[in-house]
Image 1 (cartoon, helix red, strand yellow):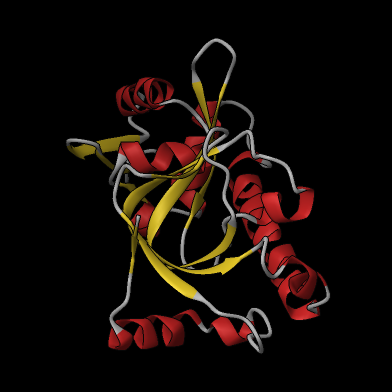
Image 2 (cartoon, rainbow, N blue to C red; image 1 turned 180 degrees about the vertical axis):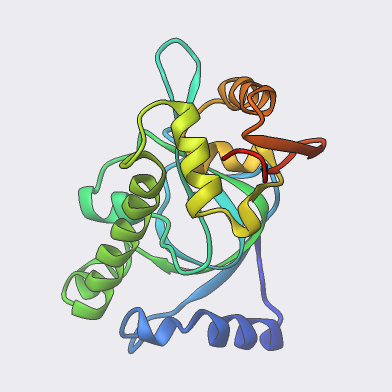
Length: 210
């Protein structure tokens, strides 16, 4: 994590984040941080003391089962909030947030400004909107489909831009399955003629699927 101190960069990020529409800034000092790819923003051993508002980049939320395997929860991008669970529950999160693409965030201390933020209806609405957005993305891929194959087809037919999957590593968090499961399903769907393999990790719907 690196704190951004360049005034011009801070001004640009503050403007792009539209942070003034997400909470009342009167009396609040905001900081700006940059997180690198592969960095853990928060984990059970690294609790988050800030509420973060991503301005650029992408991260993923996942958990780890007692057996050591991971399970995807959601992706995180501009418009989301990181740290809402910690703010609401005031407990350490059981989840991990890992950066997949260099991420810049506006940070508001949830410990220093807890009382003020708890009385800010705009901020509380922002938290609700973030929860809702993440839950909606889960439902889009899981609510209407049963097994992994159905989720993949539902995603490619109704959600994916250009009806394509271009990066397996990233899409597992959207589809809420393991990389191995996704590879197995993509291979099966290709053999069935429902999708076509364009290149490494790149698939599109087949025009012959119907």
